[in-house]
Image 1 (cartoon, rainbow, N blue to C red):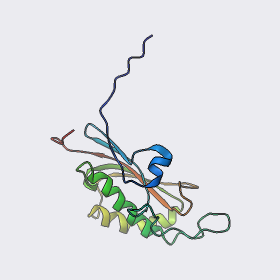
Image 2 (cartoon, rainbow, N blue to C red):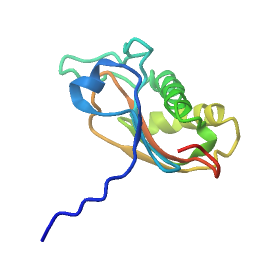
Image 3 (cartoon, rainbow, N blue to C red):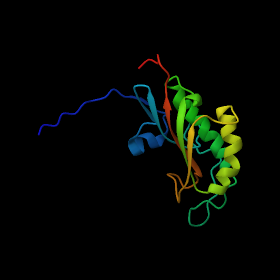
Image 4 (spheres, helix red, strand yellow):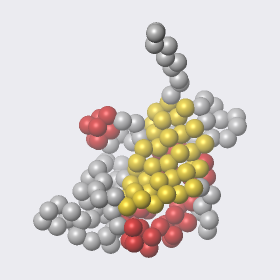
Length: 155
């Protein structure tokens, strides 16, 4: 049986941080009016982690007091990626928040998410998942999402 692949048109977004080339991925991919955003971290424009967690002798975070600062920067980066497609957090329909400490994330999330989305009740489905490790040892949070552009958005 012949392979009859049906190619799709994709647009990609990057933030020009070192791990995009090292790992080999795009920060986001747009297909039609849907945007799939890779897990965003709390880094600055140069790729330096913002508010990295202090690490213990095993290389694991000692505490989770930087959760709010990391979460805030992560949403800033998420907004930058979405903006490359003319989208904002208002276009997000689902987000998945990966955290090392669920209690610390809950303590920060209400405040930070409401600020980021600009409303008391962000209008997106949200999943909060506790994990044992993220890509970078000093990272406490990562946010991935799916966004939808409205009718009339240029493809």
